[in-house]
Length: 178
Image (cartoon, rainbow, N blue to C red; front, side):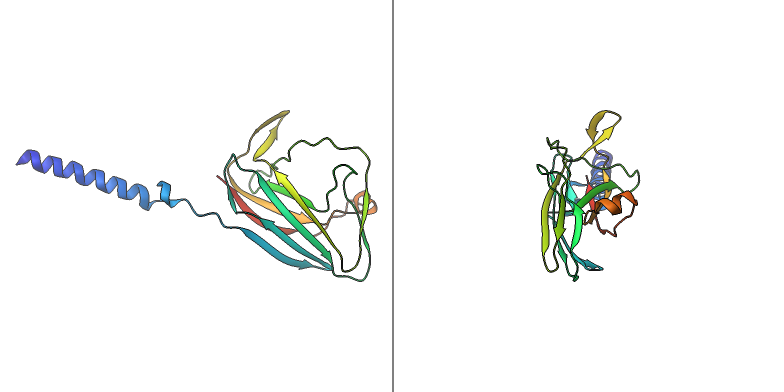
């Protein structure tokens, strides 16, 4: 009889331990579902659309940010759009919220020329930028820190604005790297 009581007590402790494991969020079923991100925001004369396939990424995932920036104003806007071989129509950065360390873009071989683009009134500039969950540590590429990351998007500046060290307001969202 005493032996049955001991076995029952051990079984109860095991059941309580397993239940506690899942209740405190450590179990495999407690991981939050990834949801797509779709932002539409207007800042001044610029309407931004930012899309990511999900808001949670693993260390093996590519992070693709799709952007569309529309000039709602009545004046042309000039901006430095990268080089002729690697154009970019949006400044996109993904930085760890606590350390500030940025995720990397895959290496591209780009020409060194600098191209200026014009965003006409009523027209849009669209692009897609890929990031990897990696960061530079010294001169080595290492897996990125897990945690929350701030994604910022803005129309690039023109040459004069760059020289004056101006900044453009950005559209922001947050993703999680797990």
